[in-house]
Image (cartoon, rainbow, N blue to C red; front, side, top):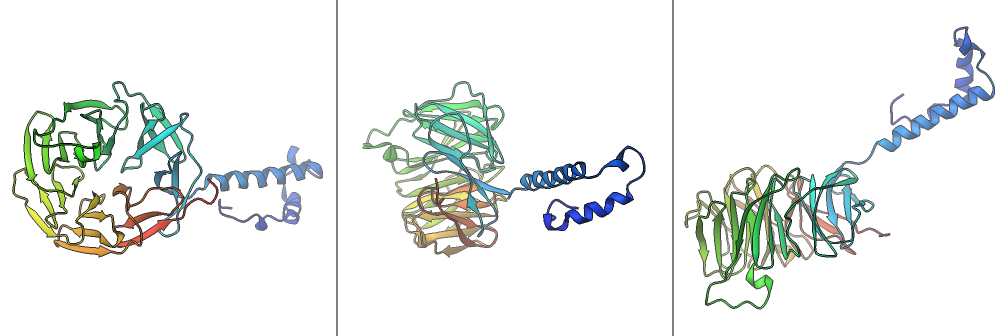
Length: 347
């Protein structure tokens, strides 16, 4: 009998008929109440096996109070129960590989958790910054960049052994004036080995290396989104003002690939697919969500019927909106379609 066998295939009468076939000895005397006990044990074993069969975890989301798994397949997924992490969380960022999450506690402290199914285990993290304004994972989740109190730091070795690889204060140009953190730092991205960091702010995009090199890739522009390809140093910039998606493979001022990107003047994010063959960008207007295919140099617009708040990879999917009272909208890159996960009816 397999795990998925229904209990209807185990009628009590069939168990009684099998009693006569038992060999003589101590088992041959089983009858009456003892037989009922054996039947109950068999039924309990089936129930235990069935409870072990759970829907696959397709991702994790933070709903403003708790970290929750997304269980099921695209188009038929649901948000699961809150994962216990032992602290009050105010924010959380999930790794693209779905194996960890960086959580900001209500007191401003940062915590790193390894994720597996419905559980989370905290990882020791010495030297973690406090009160972060922005956190981003690298495309494969092996590194992270954190901006806090005007200082940028990168860490590699995630999720097992986070190690500081770069730390610097971001000083604005003398002509720039900032009214908020959003104006000071518009976007950032870090490579999987934490060797390179892209920073957008004050109208320019700068590539910074952990060894101290600095290269300005774009200047005098507004409205950008940044991303690294998985496993290498190829970087992509969605230039909203220039209406283009540009790929830089050698950190020179000239991109090696440029794809027209109309309708993305105010981008909210950019992320590569898990295999690095495509990238997804979105703007405040959900009708401007676009899938760029690098091999063909094509751009496919998708109508989300939503208001994207960001773009981040969750396993094989790309998330466009946060969890909460509304559905979570996702891009299934493999099928070039947009699906959603319903909001939880009972938080």
